[in-house]
Amino acid sequence: DHKLLRQTALSLKNFLEDLGFTPFLLATGGKGFHIWVPLKRTDFFKEVRFFAGKIASVFAQSNPSQLTTELMIEKRKG
Image (cartoon, rainbow, N blue to C red; front, side, top):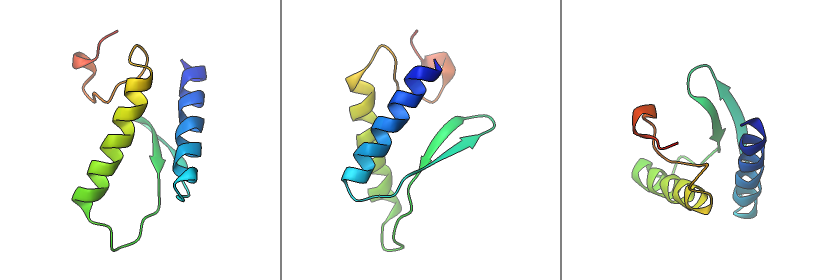
């Protein structure tokens, strides 16, 4: 649903801006949309991945009937 996608993207953008980041929306051919956030080269991959995963989990838990962190379509519910 495009309305849910817009609302979620805007909420995520505002959340990241409140944390001091400057997020950008990227449309991709096969994976939908990605939120791109420029980082300093001092940030480590494991830390960034953990942080991004936590944010995604918080958003998915806020609306579990509509949002998920599951990448594989076969494993998604609903």
